[in-house]
Length: 268
Image (cartoon, rainbow, N blue to C red; front, side):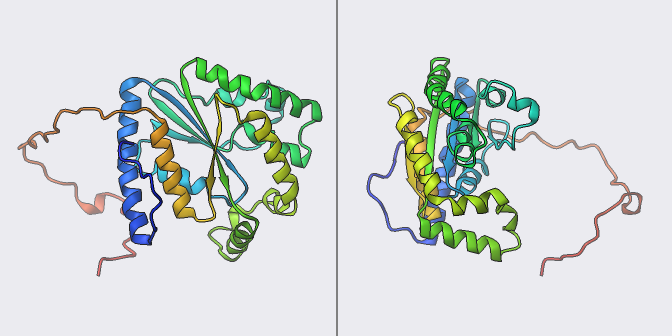
């Protein structure tokens, strides 16, 4: 991003919306460069439950083309997938030329939830810690841009967000039994994160930590950083001109020959 902010600014709701709109326009420019250049970009979003990963991914993708910038959020591996090479199911979702993939949680599940909850053996965990940096270097050597973001939320803020989800029927689906259990194991997850960073926060593929107690500032800071780290340039386009409409006469089909959705709302 050419005019990245260097000094923090006080953020009102109005300013947040204004800055977000500017950044989303830049994301469209970045998208156009990705398509034009054939670039391949992978972005990992990790962090505790309620840290705001889904929110920032939504703001990145809501104005862009889902065929170019797509989100991958894998569910629990199947019995067959459990017998595969650990990275195999993630490899299937890596970008082709002209694509960016946003991983809402990634192969680092092994270093987090699988480690804490005992879903992997010690040997599997140690092998992952050795393999992950090598795997990421392989991706980079193949020409893929790899970015890793950790959204950091405090104990107190996570507690507040959990309680808000419990009270809000539209958000209760976000609280799975695994999420509730993770709340009880705060220290275990903190230690797992520290150990993960010790192995995988490398010079080639570092972790970028985003303070996320404020969702608005976390979104703007992360998107700004993402734009800074992808070396995109503006892509020139021919001016769009709308062609003239056909002048041939046309009579619309009678309304009673089609099935219309009932009108339940009207503009006042």
